[in-house]
Image (cartoon, rainbow, N blue to C red):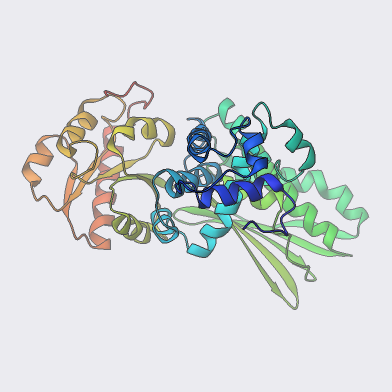
Length: 410
């Protein structure tokens, strides 16, 4: 039964219908039937329409693959199209089951929003204010920015200085001093400058509004793969709300937000991907190994992008533009040897180093077909990182990779 504490009848109905999507004896809740165009109680017809609606939620090629829009879509796809369990889905996405539960609720709300936008659902939209939530609005705004400027990079120091100048008079009137502490002058992040500006303004504004006199110190330092931005408020203030625009913006950029509160102050620490970081496309259909690769790359300059279907590789290359590819030769939909040859010959991928990681130990053939290196499964963390380091260095000495905008060979 749906949660009666949830004020949105369509989200309730969706949650109930999705939990019985493949049960031929189940019926379609009335509110959902109306949203789908009066399909009546026919669950088979409703299922077809819901699966099409989920498929229609796939973000466009201009939306980065590590954004929340992609994750919410993937949750619905894995749970209701590929029929994975919650444990299997959480493992595939490298998140906890508890986190998956929260994100699955958000994904269902986003699906409800999709249905509301369709003809015949206007009356439901009028009764529900939750379907245009903060997350979805933020995703839409960020996606629109990305359409105008791809591969956006923002320098951190000028962004901090701009935020400081913009809020200086207002914060002074509230008796709060905002100042720059230690800032790496060369720090830069893979974030659209407008998005970084809004994040910083939101952080400073929240802390200033929360203080009655005091100070806010802003700092930034760059590590191997990320830039850590810190805002320290003295005296201490309460933690920002769960649904906070700044947190949503940070998440769309592949970053994270941590809050620590002590007796003498509150620290907001934001981690954003550094321009030094390198995306690694992992082509492997084994979720356990993909999870292991993620653990291997954690804390390094490398950021993993996962793909289980070889036929989608050129689509993902165009969107993600990785610096290296880790390829399993035994894929479910294409022959790994043929794919290796295509990657070596196609202009979209010719300049991207490919590391073959497989139980098939044919190093000489793999190198002859274009692989940069071969590592045998089971691979050790240091072995994988060393292969990536060597491949990236070799690619850098050979010059920039070719554009990934060409049409895929399939």
